[in-house]
View 1: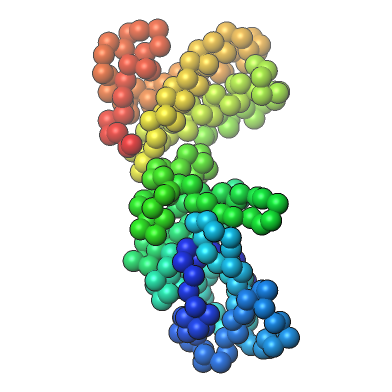
View 2: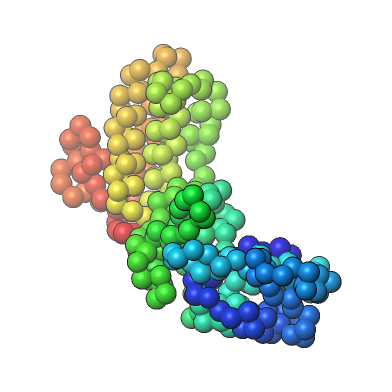
Length: 276
């Protein structure tokens, strides 16, 4: 197993060695810990556990850890499990990459109290070195006091949500540039159906959403109202049918806040449960 982690505080090398040995159930002398800028010739490269750390410039993070664990030594331990175990044993939060989001900034924070919190990590390049800032977290983390606390929109955007009606219509509908009618239909229809499916399932899979994204999704429905009249006649009825079916689910899953006979009636309804 190879893991690339960051620590918020700077534990001593001896603390890292002891934590890794305890976590991986190996003797302390089976763990080699060294500074990447130190003497590499003195290292025990045949150790089943190698931890190379780099002291980072001043910022939100203190150390970058490159950890190699020989096959069979880690058992079923994952990179996430390694980060959580180190956080609990070194009393510092430990960051590890979020594999479910294909974004360089997507990380998880393993907190010493046992929580795992999604975060956004920003690399700040300079002439001398790269510093790191934890821009936002989805729940308060004591040793990251300057990070904003918010639901990360990029995480919500990547949630797996099926769009069967959109898939069926768009399978035979032409593609185009982002600004073209075709491109706007592809975008707006999927955005509208993703919102409808969230509402239908009571905000599954995460159980949460953001008000700004909700308004963005209503704007996609605004666009569809115009696009139905702009698409080629051969596709207009099918698009209108898909939108009508989604509208029906939207009505069922929301409640009126004022007369919804207005032209843009979808703006006159609200979720039965507010998730933000």
